[in-house]
Length: 297
Image (cartoon, rainbow, N blue to C red; front, side, top):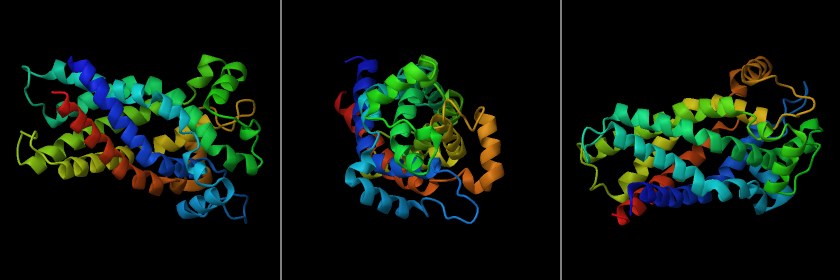
């Protein structure tokens, strides 16, 4: 198989593993990010991550934790195929000769390039996912942003294309998506390579066991969210904002208003579930990728 085909296949398998492990955590993250600021004197809708889990299970059952999974599931193959394939192609361009190991700084560059490419697929997928995950939170709060009730991923896409500016509407939040994916993937792939070399005790990481790959992948995923989490909050609130009566004029305006109304804490809503998700989900992703890639020769 060609190198591109191998990266496509391994990236798809890795992405599926990541999604299955991590989606319930992601649902809670988005619910916490998108809940409106409480009226003075009133408690917030969710007191924290565990309260959001309890309320979701009580109102929607276990299926509620997998709300919005259809959109990323339908595109997980394409998302991770693009991510790992672009990274693989950039590795080839930066190598001095075939098979030469890359430095950590070169892996950072490869990660940033892969993050840029994948942002254009991630943005519409994330918009659809966030609308489905947040509609119960915003709808019950009386927010106009969720006056429309969606029946599923295709229903969200149809509504946005028809009523929110066509294709442009599906790319709402592209700037913060780029602001998340480019530095986030640069940090993740750089950290992954650094940890693999540390655990291997040198440049040759081909003999690392599965436990070491999972540890490196899990911590690399944590570095992604540690680097860019406030940007992800801005992305989420923009993507669920009411099109006809928006609260935010753009990314900078959303950042300023969140900071003014909720302080720095508001930029880290849902951080706990995001970090709790990132370690097992990315451990599964990188392990599945490495094992599949190795099995393909």
